[in-house]
Image (cartoon, rainbow, N blue to C red; front, side, top):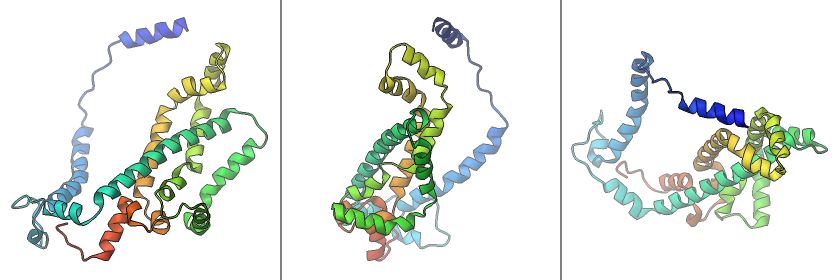
Length: 253
């Protein structure tokens, strides 16, 4: 421990080399600009008058800035509620996904129990099952549990996943077992080792899992479209799809 601390202090005191300009920056900067242009054009179109949106080619910079589209969106729809529902679903999904998948992944990586390898194989095998094949059984199960037409129907399927368990297990296996053995010799139990030693080292894997969960839960449309029919529990994706399907498109909205 003393040698490790001395080495860390020595490394911290060593001046880090400054980043230098690379010729790759000249290549990557225009490519990054190409990716930004569609988003900038979308923003400019949302601030343009309705008569300019039907012109060909449409002007990139509007002649005047108007917020009529945003006013109409938030006054004629429940967009604020949709955003709030999607935020709740994403936050609950991320927290539950990271916690449950970390616990399950650590159990399959470090704990010794009968049927561990078989159980992990069965969990990973569920990745090969198409999601569409599970929708009807899941809907029947949710209907019996009284979760249909509730916000819980949107985030319960995202509480844990086989991919998350697989990702965390593989990362925990990459951590040297000697680190946990040293903590055990210092008197830490299994829970303390997991919380104070393993989880701080697993921040990159947890951050990756959180990003994947955020993208999947926020963009999910098919399952909420099946399980939620109440306007009060619409997510953003479901609300936008319903908004586009029930009224004529107005390009200024």
